[in-house]
Amino acid sequence: MSSGGNVGGGLRWKLNHFLYSGDKKHVFVGFTLITAVFTIPWFLMSRGTKHQSHQDYMEKADKARSQRLSSSSASAK
Image 1 (cartoon, rainbow, N blue to C red):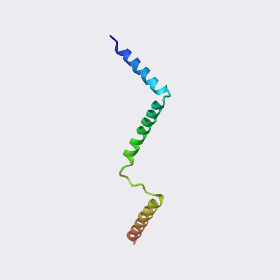
Image 2 (image 1 turned 90 degrees about the vertical axis):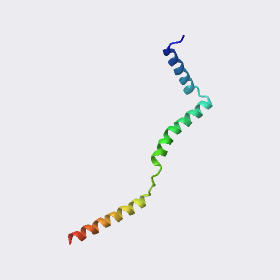
Image 3 (image 1 turned 45 degrees about the vertical axis):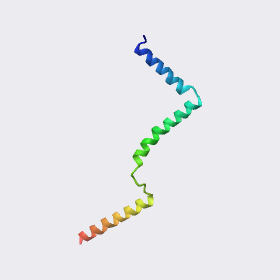
Image 4 (image 1 turned 120 degrees about the vertical axis):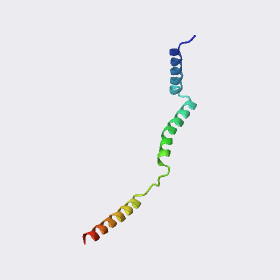
């Protein structure tokens, strides 16, 4: 019967063979996995948020600033 340590060595050999073989299908699967690892979190973080341009941000900031200044000048009177 094989021991538990032997199974880990076989798995390690298979993993090393898969990673370093240079076989086209292994390279393709590797690129696919790496792409998925980085794409899925990016998709989950960016969904539901509206990306604003710099111009939109500046217009919103100017509007808030003018409202703040007008309210502070009205309270100073």
